[in-house]
Amino acid sequence: MPVDYMPRIVDKSVQEKLAVFGALCIEGPKWCGKTRTSMEHSQSQFFIGDPSRDFQNRKLASLDPGIVLAGPCPRLLDEWQEVPSLWDAVRYEVDRRGELGQFILTGSSTPTQKGILHSGAGRIGSIRMRPMSLYESGESSGVVSLQSICRKDFTNHLVGESKIEDLAHFIIRGGWPGTLSVAREDAYQVPREYLHQVINHDIYRLEGVNRDTKKMEALLRSLARNESTTASIQTLIRDISFHDGNPINRETVSNYLALFDRLFLIEDQNAFSSNIRSSVPIKQQAKRHFVDPSLPAALLGVTEEALIQDLNTFGFLFESLCERDLLIYAESFGGKLFHYQDYKGNEIDAVISFDDGDWAAFEIKLGAGQIDKAAKHLLAIKKQFAEDRLKGPEVLCVLCGLSHAAYQREDGVYVVPITALRE
Image (cartoon, rainbow, N blue to C red; front, side):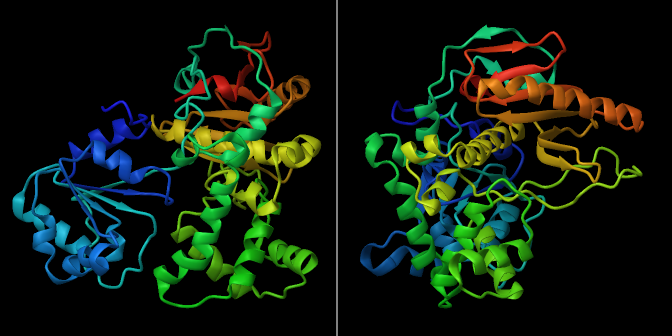
C-alpha cells in the first residue's frame, strides 16, 4: 500500500468479503476513513458526492446507473446513499456478471428503504467501519493481542508509563484520521466541527426535513452527560429538562435517536446474557455510546486540562475510548461486544462473547490504584456465576490507562494498558 495510507484493521475483512460477495458495502460515520480505505482496495472510483459542475455525478447516477457502474473492478461507488436506486442497480449488475468482488459501496448514513427493491442478500456483503483505534493511529504499541488474551495465550510485558495528559488528548482528539496531522492544541476543533456539520447539514440532507436544531443539540448534550451509562429515554428527558429547561417528549427523543443512529453518530452497547434460560434476571438496557469519545467531550466543552481536574468525567470518557477500541479489535476475529448488569447488583463494563458460548469479562479503570479492586470484583462475579450454575467468563481482564506493565496476576486476572493493546 502507498506510504501515505495508514493500514486499518478492517483491511483484512474487506479483502475477505470481496472474495465472497459480488459487492461490498462499507458503512460508518463520515470522516472515519471509509473512502480512503476503499480506494486502497478498488481499481476505479466514482464519487457521487462530488460537488463539481453542479453535482453532475449525482445527476448522472440517477439518470444512467449503467455508466456509473462501468469501469475496472473492484469499482468504488462513494456515498452511494445519495442515490439509493444505485443499490438495486449494483445488485442487478452483480447477478448479470456472475463474478465476485465487483463493487465497493461506501455510505455515511443509512437511507430509508424507499426506492430499494431488493435487500442484496447473498450478493452484497457489509462491513461497519469506525474511527481509528489507538493501535491504528499509532498510540498503542500493540504488544498485547486481544485475541491472544481471549485464547489465554499471554506473555507479560513492560510497556512503559502512560501519561494522563496523553490519555486526555486521545479522548479530546478522537480517532478521526484527519486530526492526526493537526496541532495538538487545535485538535479539539475537529469533533466540534463534525457535530456542527451533522446537526446543521447532514440531517437535512438525509431527510429533506428541517428539524429543531436546539432540541437535537439538547439531546446530544444529554447523551454526552450520560455517556457510558444505561440511561433510559425517560432519564434523558428529565436530564434535558433539568439542564436545558427545554421540554421534549418521548416521541421526539426516539425519532432523534433513530436519526443519530442512521448517521452512525451513536452506537449503543447491548446487554449480555450468558444463558438465555437462566433464572437470574438480567437487565436488558443498552449502554449509551457515541461512536467516538471525542464527540461527548466536544459536547461537554471539556479540554485536556479540564478532564484531568474532573476524574469522574475522565473515567466515563476513558471507558468510552476503551470500549470503542475493544469493539474494533473484537469484531476483527469474530467477537461481539456487550456489557452486563443483573438485579443482584453485578455489573461488568465490557463482555466479549463468541459463537461457541465462551466469553471474557473486562473491567475498565483509568488509574493503577483501581486495579486491585477491579480484579477482586471480576473474581467475585465469576464465583457468583459458578454458584448460580451458569457458564462464567473464561477470561478476566482489567483494562487500564496508567500502568507500566501488561501482566497476569497470581489470581489469574490479566492487567493490560489500553496503550499496549491491539486486535
